[in-house]
Image (cartoon, rainbow, N blue to C red):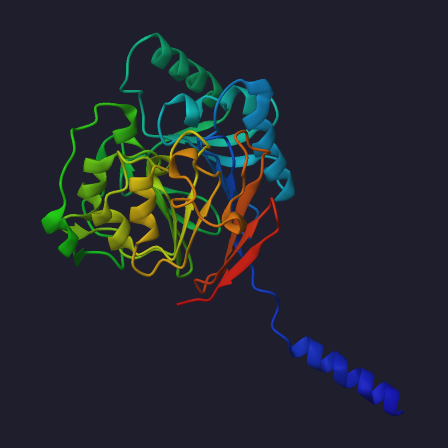
Length: 337
């Protein structure tokens, strides 16, 4: 009888253990200095932010589809385009030839003109006609099941009220200096704040310096976040200290390429942010040298041309998260704060 009693006791103990906590997974896919960030909720709803570059033998589309399949997806529920530049929307036609999209989310018309801009917009409009299209403004939400996706910037406009947890006076604004206004699509980037329980993730595309200051000054409309993907690939025309240090990211991901982004000035602002536990990078940035790049364990690609590696963040509703580097399988967990 003793073995049976022991077995029953072990079974009862196992049944009392809490189930594994469900996570929202965020894949930062290497598209060589563009952006392709895939969010997957526990409900298996998906939001892809941008599509990377066109050309290169379908390189970026293939990398996105590979990550999507790893996540168990057969389609993309929402595709959010931050702005109409080749490194963000250029790969849309190639992507749609490999995976369907349900709803296309954007800020409205392309504000740039000329042959290249018109061609990009034509390709996007044609692609978006294959599904639903949702044009959003600050304060709107993308109806992704399992997470709250709040639009905080769109078409050059900024949320007019702080989000819950934001609104703090920002002393860094006193010394913040503006740069020349940016007339391009970058300054019109569609940016979102994603909340999953108490976990918060911010992605504001290629928003440029002065627009970022509008988010942060005179008060910080965003409040603290857990995860931050560096604005504009870590270029020094974006990412002012008044914003980056005010939002206090615990983990930052730099979606740079070897020869694009990861500038020493922008890198130092992120690396010195108060409360930052780690910075991870998609590429070793040539401009940064050994002094302004993270340790190899935190780099998804070391070479001039990437191998399609990714960084995956698995976030819990408590605010805890685990970061995984697909190149070397380096994994690190950050406790809830």
